Image (cartoon, rainbow over all chains, first blue to last red; front, side, top):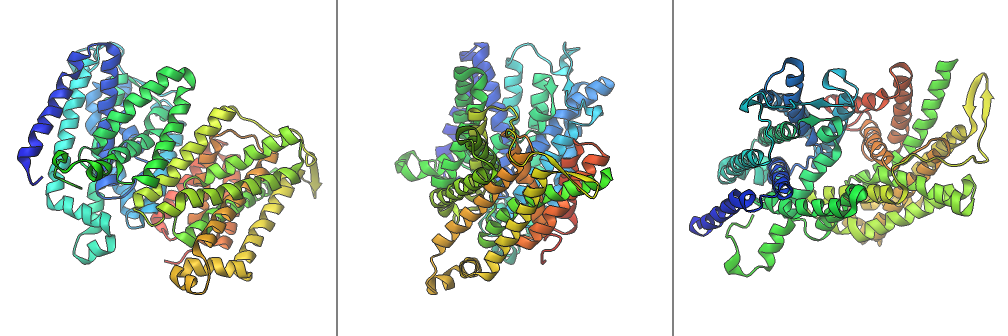
Length: 325
Length: 285
């Protein structure tokens, strides 16, 4: 970000593209892809804060996503609250969970954190499937017909598109602000070497937990947006391991720990996923995950920095953005 | 008497948990590397057994051997093609590599074998025997005992033989081992082969008695984590005790609370362990 004059126009161009996309492609199919893309970009960018910038690879972020997804519909079903009232409740629960999980596990090495996050997410998924209050294995449903705008239940995709775009913009701005503040440098130091960071006076544990909390907040919001939009949630679509996998792969494909990496990853993966699902029909989802697995292995083996780093290496100097990660 | 039967059944299944977890703990202890695809190795061992039985109409000895060999080879290939290259890379690459591998193996199995549960046809080990009033399926008894023998065998191999000392030497100090004329890459490939082979044979032992589907790998992988966390990282005897304990806890919670709660109890135990003793029950701080 040394040359803002070079970067600004690109960001404005990107913003303009995202703003006019649903107006140019007014077909419901393309708008749906657009909304799916935005949601994937939000969750992956949220994961990116702790998984990319801080280098603490969580593979159980679906725990926050699921809590965020369940809260709006739960309070709607219990007391008829407008679903959006559940968003802050979801955030508070996710924050508490982040502290409970983060305090013991972030003390340990990176592998252990990954393992613990999978185990906790699975624990919550199985437990949700047996708990009648939250609909057990059947799940929860939102309002079928909107009682007013505050229910955020719209017929078309367009209102969701712009709400999601607004959230993504806020999240990217927060990430951008972190990158330039001391907190961001702390995260980078921790990722590069925890022991060295500690010896230089970085408050390692505090910083890691704060990163996890921030990440959990936005992941929870992503989950809430998903369940409010679809009006339905069950254990698999809220807490399933594939929800976490998608966040990791999208961020890693584009470039974990870079501002626009998750956006690039979602831009490639979501159309790809839609294509495999359309081409192969029912068996498509299986193929999608074979593809996911293959992509993850290839990234890990050949390009752990993601496409962003590949670009920085092979692109001519004058095209580069000037802020190598 | 029924309760006693539940306990014995839990211990016999726990012995198989111990066998595949000892493979996970071996890699972890030796290379400080977690294999997220370990449960998938167990799952593949089960399908290898099925193929041997269906195509070659082989008996338990044949498919047990085939599963061990096939997974040993797969383990070596995965080490040489993937792990060796990401081992020294960033943490993200290490975790992603085996995590992606797990997805790849799991969903390829879904694609080939479908999501339906399958089980082996009757083998020569079917039937039950009566040990002092406790009715035990013969297959479970043989598998459980064999799993303990193999786990103990692996422990002795690691502690009492030259090849075991070489493996240990590489894990203690790679460079010093190289100066002693040991080739770390070969030893680590061997460790991956042994680890996957142990998972494969454990899969074959389980396939005799239990039905399965491609998704069992995830459950077994997590179970192995819990066992290793409980037994201490890198300790094969620890994995043996912890495997038996986990099998027992699962059997008792399935008996008292209902079958769906058996995994909840185990994962909850894991989370509790993280809080109280993150270094493992028998591990050093």
